[in-house]
Image 1 (tube, rainbow, N blue to C red):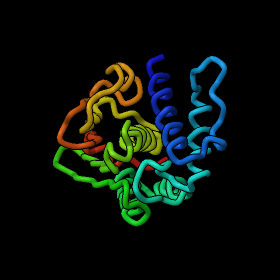
Image 2: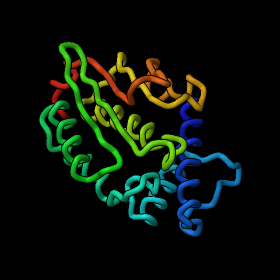
Image 3: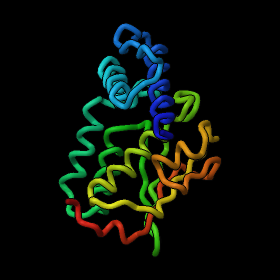
Length: 195
């Protein structure tokens, strides 16, 4: 399964950050087979986040309190429409994080969600940008009970894994070495009601 490769990469990014921050004792043991499961990825994420009390997992130059990520999703759930949910999430991150910013641009045909992270000097694998792209697109679709098959996701950095790995999680329209880190989908999706 292609998405398994992304789980491996994401987990290794978090392990590397944990080791850089000296929290080896807080990290789960590597599985006997050497491959991380989805559950193990979540365990590693929670371990690193808790040990550092950082929703950015030590991948930035400043800390974001761990509860911020969960609270941000809860804020989205208070919304009537997806557009309102994304606006709340953006405003929340303006307050909660100086490392990750989310800007939303609406055109006549599309919504563009631009993400900015701490950069490769702090986050060599660009985990925060890739993970938050997966997260924002996934949560947006989950909130309204629909998929956005024409969504496009662009990243500024070079692709590190096979294209099929990213397509299995983000869809077929994933591009790298682009001018911005961006999630785009049709503007009419913003009017969908949160269910």
